[in-house]
Length: 262
Image 1 (cartoon, rainbow, N blue to C red):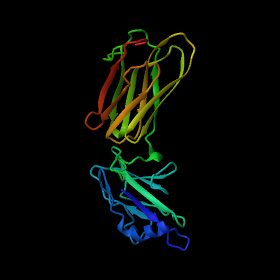
Image 2: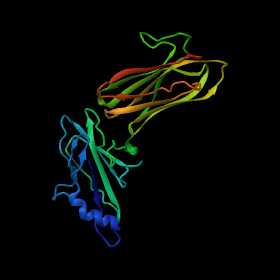
Image 3: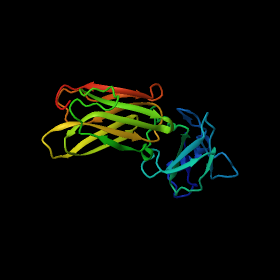
Image 4: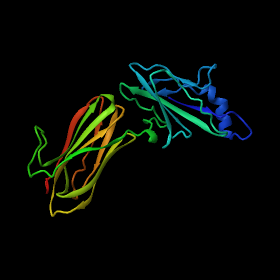
């Protein structure tokens, strides 16, 4: 589901652009992990129109444009309910424009596979995520509501909702009783990384907190969750696991801690 658009040939055009110009009419058939899009400039009467095949169940599509095949920061996005998108942007001499398309609604699709057969990572469109709520300092032995998590456990509870929304709760993470901390979540390829750093602690004690995170626009698939957190001791099992959002859209993963403050 990637196609490139070459600049018009000129004496200033680089060799790679000349080669791209020569092969471009034959390079528009691209297979994606979720279907054959056949993305390309197919209409000879309108050379600015990109079009692609309909995908089953799709109601909206998202298109990316970049000047590098890695799609780094700064790419241009288009969203459309149609099977085509006009883009009159002309490449500079010696420049290529690269395009990707995916299903956006009702659930975001992937950006296809890279040359190694892995799900393509598009850094300019990493799903946004962040900390949305926190609770604590919890009393010793305290559990919230009907939660099955015991105070001796360190857990991630997750729920994948429609529209690509993933909710994760880190239950019983440890901080100073009077903390200042930074907590964030990011998606890097097929990895979901939670990082929790304490920047200041004023009290002479530590206790447990619950932190809630949210990621928007996450394509369904298999992801490896990793948590970097405070107050683990040597030999403690890291909190990390693999989730399949299609097979198991909700779940709970816990490790047992046997030292203070658990």
